[in-house]
Length: 209
Length: 173
Image (cartoon, rainbow over all chains, first blue to last red):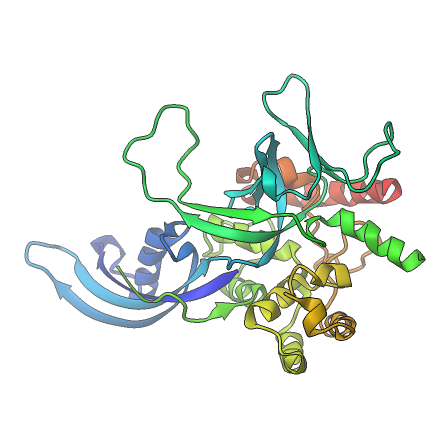
């Protein structure tokens, strides 16, 4: 889920933090610049791991601040394809599910990646929202509460299908969703994936039989 | 900005948690004092709820040496350490072609995982004695706004109410 990336960046140290020790000041500047931002092909930057080297300290003419070239390592969140991650349900509508990790929200499970067969039960009076139910092998039960429901009760395991980095759009129409620079698409269509409670029941059944 | 090495090493969730802890992250609500950004706290909260919150370096190293005989791919080892599968059905989506490569030995691998790595915090066991290990903010917060989680000073109160609700949940399930 997390990788270290070695980066080099040239940055200007504003004069108001010159009283701090150099590496602390540089670290604060780097964090303000990189933290919680997505770098294309690299992922979401979580933290500055360490600073490897600091070079420079030049003052350009006409400038009151010094400029440094810093080499440092970042912790980035970049799931690889095939990784299994536990996340919580954020939204559920007719197009599929949206999951959240707390620090990262743009995880989508499209309809065709839900376990097969699944059906959608819309909540009345809400536009497009509802919950998904997996019809696994039950032919006879009609009025019982279905066993395999995806509601927000427990965390959901999914496997990463793809990670797409969208390019920044020039213009966005009004009322559209905020731009998501990094979108993870996942699948639930495998044994062991889906809400954790589904498979705890399966374990119990195995032990009984 | 130049990317010198996009991949300078993979980190397990445990290593990230350890790093955040060494920077001073902790669970108590007085988080304004430490030098950790709110976004880093969100990662810390997520990691605390996952199976890695009880792991130690020795356990991870022991697992790495002992699983060498199974010839797992690096991605699979990483997945296993992060998820701590305790049943065959949990390890199935992680390992490709499990039947061809392992067959019977898959159960041995599962029992190795269960033996070496500590259990994740259970969600519906009200008699946990160690409150540090149990951080069950999963259930009720599924639909909450993420913004309220890190700046929420009533986090301790919420934990208490969740313990009660977990007790109820156990009877239902």
